[in-house]
Image (tube, rainbow, N blue to C red; front, side, top):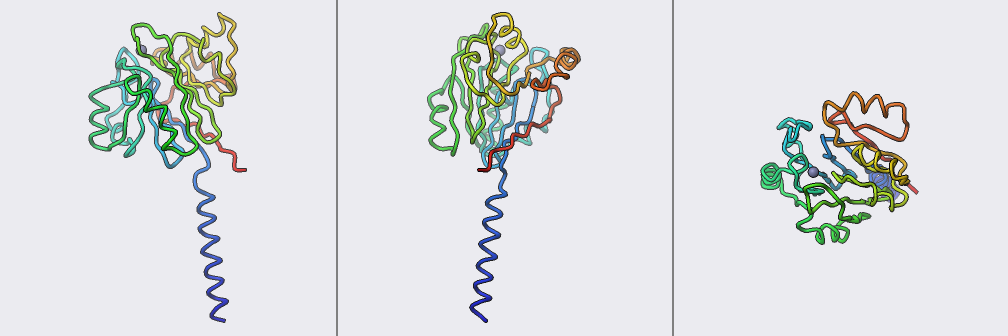
Length: 232
Ligand SMILES: [Zn+2]
């Protein structure tokens, strides 16, 4: 009798652990923070791209101080370049001082590529891309679990993205879509997030893209995209 109870107890405990393990977040969440700022998480690791920038810089989106406070501890910060609507030295310094974490960009691009050694099911390909007035601009293709997410940043050209295959989400400014159209470049992405919209451009972007199933204008700060991961 005693042994049976013990067996049952262990079986139940095992089932519980197995269930908890299994039900651990099987998705990647992408939250829009403004401009090219995204918060991307698999529930374990937290990545911020082009955030924090300087709120309101160059007439682009503002954010509240509380958004800096909500940044997770020990995050990874990836920047495409250092223009102030993408990057703020003051803000990132403050955040890393208070919460730890590490920032990556043109200044330590090798370290960024090596992130795959410390993160599970993660890799990032880096592409030096053209951007006016910025000699050091990079775009990134993150492969995380089974998802491929492209971060265009501020580049003007669709040249690089046109060479990539099988992206799940491509985050691009609208002018990359225009460039692709003009130059007959096909972009192999299931979904497009059009980011880096100035507040005044939001109504026309909505009008233009709202009816298209594969293009989402990133207009609402805080809105989330959920990417369900394959469970097989
Ligand atoms: Zn720029």
